[in-house]
Length: 153
Image 1 (cartoon, rainbow, N blue to C red):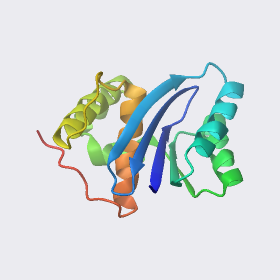
Image 2 (cartoon, rainbow, N blue to C red):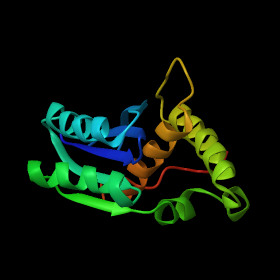
Image 3 (cartoon, rainbow, N blue to C red):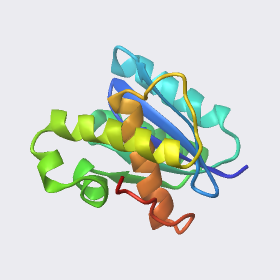
């Protein structure tokens, strides 16, 4: 299975794996505590996913750089983006008035999209995992792996 990994970069990291059809396989979040642990985790995650074809990272600074360097060591194409790159395609302006409002809207939207596409989870993804899922969907659309999911309810 070819796959794309989307990362909401930070010490609190959101991860989402999408298959080659742009369907979400899983999403999760991890609080790694510090950048040293993040560096080890990034390398481990990328090597544990042998079919990984592409990495997209949202964020900047040291945490995004850790993922970018881990991808380079693996020879994996990596795109680093910012929140405004994907949020404008998924959220309304009123949902982006603050970071907290955008995170809450992302959680609600992911729940709607996942239910509509037949994915089930025992819990609602937290905001880090939800944002990673939307980052992955955004990238899958940009890469031509899928069409934009229906967003209205």
